[in-house]
Length: 260
Ligand code: MG
Ligand code: MG
Image 1 (cartoon, rainbow, N blue to C red):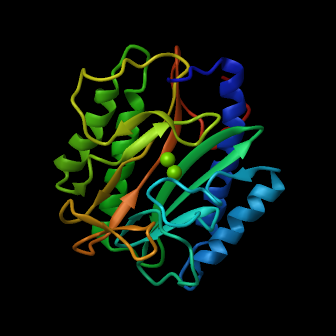
Image 2: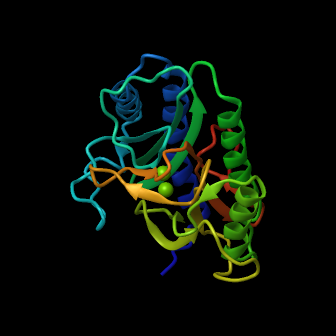
């Protein structure tokens, strides 16, 4: 069952999206060489308190996980693709950091992720991050009424493969609304012109994950973090996107007073 959101509900989701965007921007500002992942988690907690919002991640227990998620952010550094649990690890010069964050405002969830480097970047990592962002933007541009889910999925694969990166087609995004993970699943690979027909009022979290090297990944000892098997670096980008008659609306992008 795919829920279609009303314009009023989309406005409520945008409020959650703005908290998420604010937290990610604030964490990015705070991140740097020597800063611990737990310190970034604390920054996000402060943003939640300030906006009277709740974490979507804290205590989340999906079927694959051995323990409830213990933090409000996922912090995935270098070879960690997604679902990194923040710990005392301090960021080092040149690290590639992916931060994933989701929040609940008035019962509505929003979910977004960014990747960036700290200190002096490696050119190859900058290119990986830019391509991951391009894959996300390309998929977002196809999130329009009458389009197909396979169009988005295929776009992510095309951008990733076109640049020669590894990825996992089995992973991807999801519908989002009253729950963080709703139908439909939004795979990162698919066939254009196939799959679910997109309709006004759907909200999709779209999230490409690209890496240097091959496609293989493994789950870490904590049962949460996914890392590349060859230990090469990965990037992740995500936005929560509303499909509207006026085109895609990115709910998790910082915006001014514009209205839906
Ligand atoms: Mg996310
Ligand atoms: Mg997500």
